[in-house]
Image 1: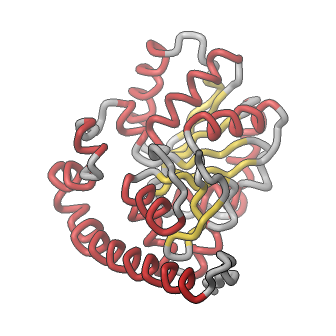
Image 2: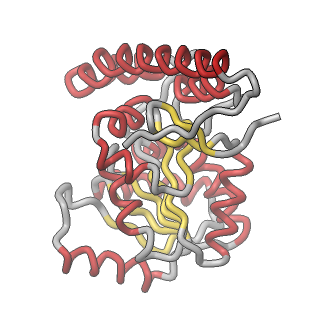
Length: 268
């Protein structure tokens, strides 16, 4: 049985949930027009919060932060004994939410990426989900918006009638976006990263066996070595080192506190 809740992995609170729980929470929030900021975090996303205390507070202010990468799921299980059987991968979660949205007539909006990627994405989704109500899509400006532009985006999304917004700006920009727009838009905001590129057919996804073994990073590194080598060859070993240290810390507390009660952790 999954021990649901949020658990810290290197100071970032990760939601111990499965696809069913995530999709149900998103659809319920969409139908009730309730704000819900969601992100799917892999190792790189966790490390952005680990190194930046301001961004860590943003991440911990999101409503759901799913374990997008297998190493994040493993950390939940190793450190906290969560028993999570699978990760909640952003691209897969996207398809599951779109399936529910198409079935229940929930209108959706897409924000981010390039115009040509969005065009291909919408063409593909139209074929896959003929009943899906896409009420708007706009590309990223690839810079921070000024206050006037931000309000224009908010108004466009509101006027579209959307009940769910998918955000594809890349990590960590999309998490910042979801955090900043959450209270302005009464709907689920899903920061799903490379899902736009994958489902548009712009980038190939790793084979299932590599995903299951936590080797998706290697596949992506081979695809984009110039852009991703620092992210994976530096951050991955650092992540594993600090996860190991956190495991030792939890084990030590368990020995020192045999009643099973652990002191509340603070990550500043």
